[in-house]
Length: 307
Image (cartoon, rainbow, N blue to C red):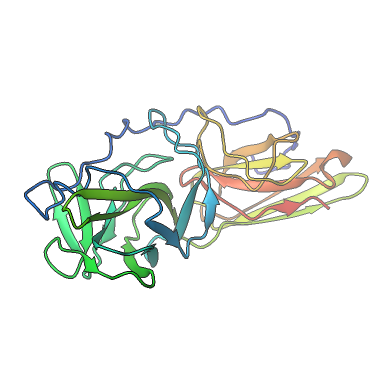
């Protein structure tokens, strides 16, 4: 590894390392089966407009892993590994008995592969089978809440994400299941993403360029993976471009757009995750934007303008 100046040529489009994807996940598990109130009848009919998610962070459309159907843009919640997040839903137009369910904890991660490691919310009853885990919130065994016809009723599933959970997007699902006076069953469900962020300190990038004419440039970063590899990316615009499939960290959303998106440098992050590179560039970097990608964890840094 050379320690002298690097010519940051801002060439090449994307990193060419190969990412090993996890095997495709199976389809989502069925709900519990049984007699009467044990959801055997609760999923015979889909009823729309009975529930909604709230207190979510926004809408996001990550690139799913290879072999996983593209779910498109969905609401998402976000949490840092090692911390907790409340994921909330409400039932509307309540007229019958209902139970809330949250599903999908045994599915693999949407973007990079891996599993969601978490602690149960003791307020919800856990049901575990050979291939699925889901949780139910009700006021009695499978009976749900009897709300009447007035205000919506809200619940929150408090999820504690273990510190070792890989960062990325996980696909979960809230459902509302119930029965009408004729004891016909129905359900309404909504998929959503849980974004798990790294529990490590934020990856920080600093760029000091000579502008407007070009010349010496100083690039430094901290909190990368010690001894790992990083890629310094450059683009003429900001955005939310996901790294394409076939590249390392595929699906990771960047803070950069696609205008002249390039890899300016790829190499060692430094023994302690900190490093400074001094180089020379032309005027083309001025007004453009830089972002650092930590390849072992797929974390991204802040976006810095070349100026």
